[in-house]
Image (cartoon, rainbow, N blue to C red; front, side, top):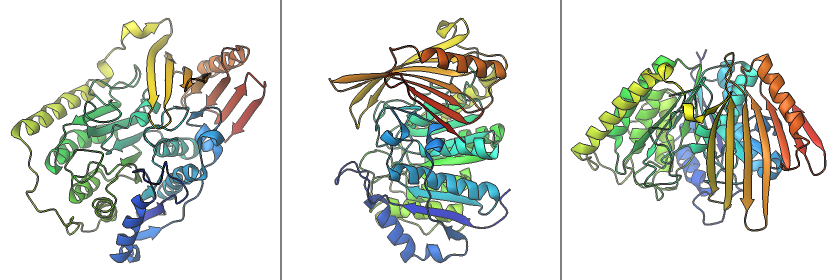
Amino acid sequence: MNKCKKTGLIFFPAFDWAISPTHPEREERLLYTRDQIFEEGIMDLPQIEEYKPSLAGIHDVARLHFCVPTVEKQTTEAHLIAAGAAILLSDKIVSGEIKNGFALVRPPGHHAMRVVHGNRGFCNINNEAIMVDHLRSRHGLKKIAIIDTDVHHGDGTQDIFWHDPDVLFISFHQDGRTLYPGTGYTYELGGPRAYARTINIPLQPGTTDESLLYVVDNLILPILKDFKPDFIVNSAGQDNHYTDPLGSMRITANGYAALTEKLRPDLAVLEGGYAIETALPYVNMGIILALAGLDYSGVKEPDYWPGRFTERPDMKENVERLADELLQRWEARDRVSPDAKRISGNYYTRDKHIFYDTDYIEENQTEQLRLCDDCPGYLLIDSEANHGYTRSVRVLCVSVPHAACGRCREEAAELYERSKKDTMYKYIYLQNKHEDIFYSYSTDSHNEWRSEG
């Protein structure tokens, strides 16, 4: 599919968006990177092509997220540009115009879940997930793999694809017992019809390049070879770097470049990474060179020397056991039965409590998957969020998957229509991915909004 030699890049520092002037997630994250890449002449190489970003549409977001009350209320232009950059590069890759790409953009997105009541983990909307749904809706790609290399568990991406058997989500990250968001354990393996399509690899603080690349070689690459994805996305967080102020890992720029060379992602999308001067310029340069198939061995941080970081023998042994255990889970993926205690009638139910650490919102969800013998089944989400002491908002969300059968599409549409009469919900949503149509209904105003791709 990709016979040309160019790697596409998009830089979007989002000058007009920041949580606060001194917050780690601010525009300087990309300015030092851009300066160094230009100084080193990377942008003049024939293997590199730079593109200007474009905006994702409101429908692109509504196809993937339930934004409460609307997409417009939960996003700024910066959010739409960050998601749009990922979409633009994915289009260039699928068309064969470029070999692969790297969207160096902010705001990040991998903590944004399917339902969005506000900002959590610096994220409002999920750039990679929106791009994946675009690839499936517009280009007909079916099997996608997302490899999340951020130090923080990609809980939002996991939530969105939890029940999807055709999206493989693999996240390695610092152990959730030691870092936000406190999730990403080995027993989090996906829904009843998508078991082991979610693989979490929690690593101990102090993990070095050696263990990281062991996991890649002995777990991630064998799973990718078996899964045979049509498209590979790297959710490219860089806060595993040894100088990052938010993490406690010891990964180097050269380690990140070697990781990229081994994964061979079609598209990398920047996530976290907050060592603005000591890590990001070096890590990003290493990733770009690896994507372009160029020598990255000379990319070294000024304060790094070979052998600076070592691991205890027990850490290496733990990583080896972890890789073996998870590979066995993957190999048994189609032989594991759903948890019978969660099944009532034709529905599989799970309850979730979600905290929005940036906006201080408490959300409670009841999620029900319609168990269907002919398709992945549609999803119902009853979500109530408390915005401080003054108000709570309850919504009902109905999501119909791309591969939905006719019966599930009809049931979901009927449920949406019946629920419009239920005054306990402030908003009712229907997301029909199969027909690429989104509906939103307000029980206060009795107004309905419809968007069609």
